[in-house]
Image 1 (cartoon, rainbow, N blue to C red):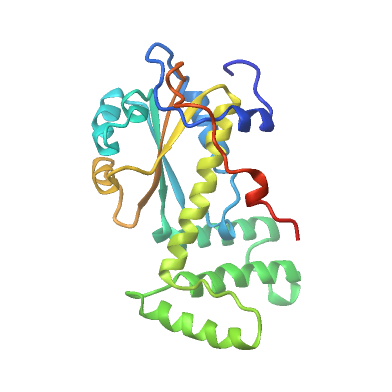
Image 2 (image 1 turned 120 degrees about the horizontal axis):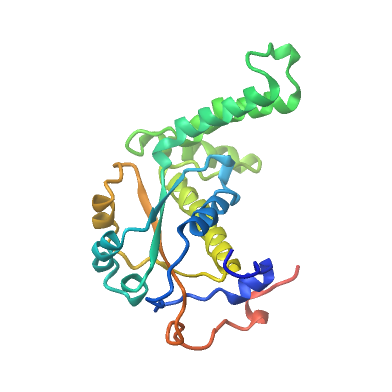
Length: 246
């Protein structure tokens, strides 16, 4: 622990996108790792967990990555970096992991007659529905799935996001939730972060030797803020303009 850990509300108020970090104040990489572990507890679509986290602690590697973040101060002065990566291509592996978890909880190879309704639904979901949603070939299958859902949707409410592009958006949304968990966890420890979307993702992927199916969601720099690290007061659109009670 850095100091006494902040509450969730305190951490949210404390968190700012910090652009300049103190070069003299190092981060405990184990605390950062703990915050990444807490990132994995973020809610995510169908519990598929189509994400990976690359924790960069090497100063040499940070120096290499900084130009690919267009030499933003948040990258150049970072003590550590965390690269949030989506892995939509791992959907079969992650669906199988969920089925293994079901086996561990309900028992493997249960006859259907002995399965509870909850178990049946869960097994069908990961063995039938998930493959239907994620399987595709050059976008062709996704187009026909979309047409099928559109026709069914004329008659009743139906899930419509079944194209490969939809699955990609879902993977990035849930990875973003993990990144937010991480940044709030860091703030709770008194550590600072800055999420960077302005990056050359292709060059970073090559540098980190990421597989073909991986996509960078965002790069988050980490450190301890300096007085000049926050570029002004926090600005938010008035709450009344963005809030509607129905």
